[in-house]
Image (cartoon, rainbow, N blue to C red):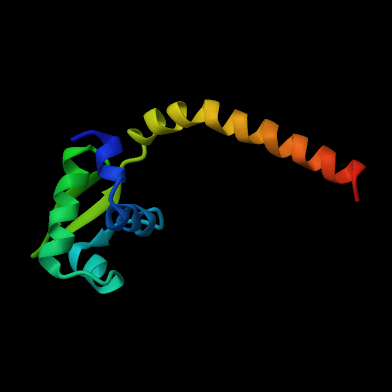
Length: 100
């Protein structure tokens, strides 16, 4: 599973957003999302396969944490697009300053 394929699904991005704040149990993720436990488990499995989350047992619960390293590939891919938009926004700002 590629990082890009994993990030393509909105619920998986929501899970990563939640995990930015720190580790969470699967139950906490279910409570925070509008998804069933099997649905959250399915998305966590994809995120694990893409290397975006780590998992470990603690008692009867499984805890998940974000692994940001694979996101470096996405950041590197997006950088030229950021530069493109930054340049365009700078041009718009300049135009708006000259044409109030």
